[in-house]
Length: 375
Image 1: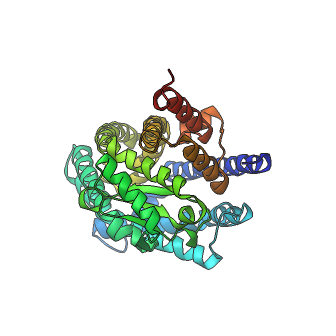
Image 2 (image 1 turned 180 degrees about the vertical axis):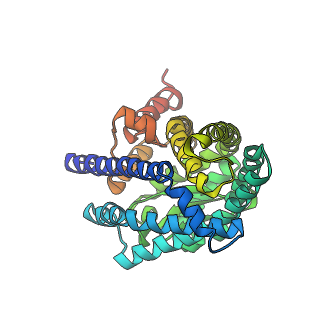
Image 3 (image 1 turned 120 degrees about the vertical axis):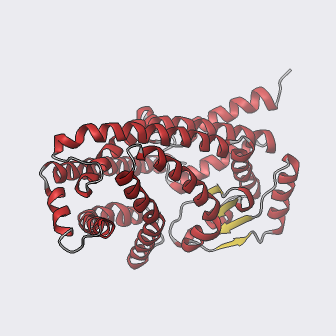
């Protein structure tokens, strides 16, 4: 990445970070005022004028808040989501294509989220230790979603097809055989329909596990580089990162919901509520969750960055090709307009991946010390 692109990447990251933090603060303050000034309670009274069923009232309550939130956030989403991506040459979406994707995401999110919302309300209305039962359900539901995502959810947004390049396919299959990795398929997806960025991912569990490569990656990277990306994604599975993430999520879900439930019960009377199941009080729980998520985000980010370094080392071990790894990282930074050397605090608090510069440095050190094995 030349110096001009580096400056552009820093500017892009700064804008995205500033807007993201500002949007989060504004949303938090507005929701806090909504609860503190009793508008939340008034809205609860309003929706119960049209139904006596608390679950239907919950739907009305959520739809009204969601509608107002969408209207208020649309200008920010448009200027710093749609327009910004085009300004920096990263988006392939038309305006109506962007709208379509947002609507699609909202509908899919509603379908996925609705069962959890209704179960949550039933639990909080029925059990004192609702947080424990909710944590069990959320954990089980997340595993189910992880299993069905590659075959039911992701195809709603992208078209998947097996890799057609026979030479590349053979290299990937040889790599799988070399390390004893069984996968149901290696697929490419039409990432280019929305963005010029390149990416790859490991998805699914059990019989649905597969590695997916964006068509932007296939088109712009050499076979050596794609093999490195594939080896990295394979490393996440071989190093047990999926299993470790599940165990971590179990602890985080149970501990998080327990702590949030205690804070919620403590704050209820201070905001004029008497029972945890009052619909008007639920935005208070959302506020607690947002603060808790922000404060604990570095914990998950540290673990994620550790896993990325481990997957990088696995890729170096497997391919023995540091030069391909280095060129892949540099091209990813250029194509995705990623700041290869972000502020250390920003990286610590917000980044799930280490900076590309650190990844290259650590990979080179590992390659020199353990692969070349100098005499």
